[in-house]
Image (tube, rainbow over all chains, first blue to last red; front, top):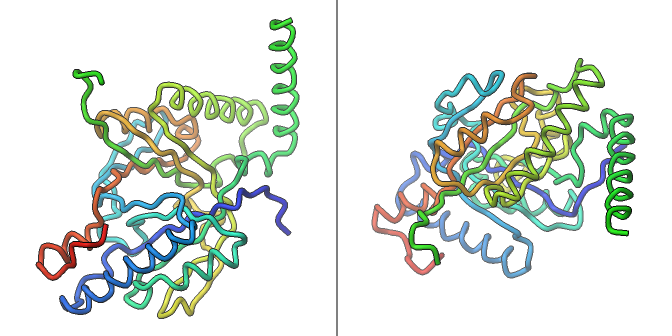
Length: 149
Length: 138
């Protein structure tokens, strides 16, 4: 059961950015033409809210106060995220159907399909926290109203 | 137009690890969530964050020819899983990293991936370099 409140938006994460290696120029050209047509098709149906490729370089920040900053291991990884597409869809099924039509899939890329949430899932895991923040928001609204009065 | 303003660069912060809130006391949890929300609001007010969203733990992974393989995501309960993102517009990579370092989840084990947003897909670029790529597509 899923009680999370979603937004009708889905994030497609394209994983494994090196699927083009080993393709001939002809194959590459064909698949890129198909990719463009795929994207334009989605765009003309107003399914695309945003989409961008990501640079292979970057950093990974971790540790208290971000004490550890390392170069990302994403460049050569099959798990690496190479780009994203923020999709407008009626359901997870529709988002998955769109993901399945992505032309580069046959060359080994992977598409992760994730519903976008209206609220942080931490609130779902900790309902008492959600209640507390709601009460706090109501109090803030009241004090604003009092200040305005 | 401000003549002294410099070009801005876009970065995506990917928040990895969706289980770091486990085992925190209610007080810790309340503080980290408050701090995170305040951090997001401040960055938006400063014009440095254009948007951000949490992602649902559930989802699908599509792979194989014609997307034949559809699996439930392995991202549930994973340190590598992407739990959400911020879209930043900042001066340079250093500023993006400095902002990433302010993430309130870091001290509990959250990891922030900082990725420059590319103008052009690297594969498209490669195809263009080979000289075989149609130039019409944008």
